[in-house]
Every structure is written in C-alpha cells, then in structure tokens.
Length: 197
Image (cartoon, rainbow, N blue to C red; front, side):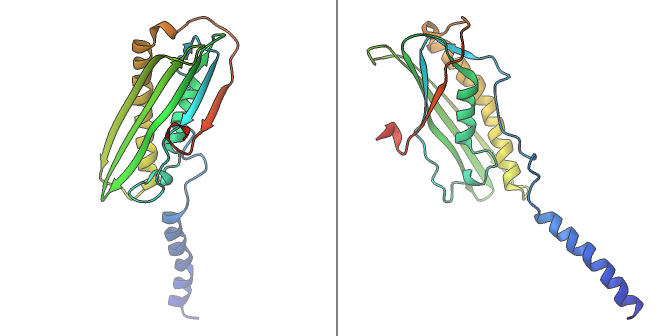
C-alpha cells in the first residue's frame, strides 16, 4: 500500500465524521421545555379551570409547527398549567387556545398565538372574558429550522405571558384573588374542533 493510499484511509474517516456532525440530531437537552412556574401566578376566584385546545395545527405546509421542538400548543398549555390557580369554591374558568400558528413562506416564518379566558358563574352563564394575542415574523433562515422555530416560540411565549397577564388583570379584576389555598387540579381537555363540536 502506498503512502498516499495510507493517508487517504486516515483522512476518510475524519471527512465522514465531519459530514455526519452537520446532520446529527440535536442533543436531548438542546431544547428545554418551556415552563412558566417562576412567574407570579394568576389566582382566580373559581373552583376549577378547564384548558381547551380549540386550534388544531394543519400538520402540512405551509404549517411548520410540527418541526418545532416545543409545539406552540404545548407551550400555551404549559403557561395555563403553570400560571392559573383556582382558589374559589364555586364558578369555573375556561382557558381556550384559539390559535397557535407557525407557517413558512420561502424564508419567512410567521407566528401567531391567541388565547381566551372565560369565567362562568354557578348558573353556567358567562361572567367575565379576556383575550390575548401576539404575532411575530422572522425572515432569513440559518439552515437550522428547529432552532429558529424554538427561539421564535420562546419569544412569542415571553410576549404572551406579559399580554395575557395584562388582559386578565384589566378585564377580570372582580375574579382575581390574592388569597392562598391548596392547588386545585387543572383539567386539560383537548378538543378536536373549535367549541368541542
């Protein structure tokens, strides 16, 4: 075997290794879950909180939410679980995910989120209502779609936490409490269609 052949055999594994690194999957801890229990809780004078998913991602282009390491829908559910507390003995709150879109057109990604929080009294009549909406656009992809989508979702959720708390405190003042009580389980109810139809 010639010296040149030996050198080629030594270099080839390094080249193949370098190529593999470019396509290697992200490390398991590269995209930590998005949680919000470090933020002040929003305490409601209700006996229960129902989380409803009224938005279903399309799952086909231009939707790219399926490529996000943390799905926008899951991030919104985490926000509701982490921040909403039921401290009352009657009445009910319904947190609804109305929109959690990530769509891509060429090198532009558009994200939008919309949620609502409705209070129902003991007669099941609507007694209070608040909505929060955020949007963001990102242009120019670095080649790592998962990283771009994760960063975009994280930023939108930062915005959503601020907007949601503001809207809840502005529109549901009569239903907020600062009292302390044992945590009441939050019921998570995924719905196939808006309104559970």
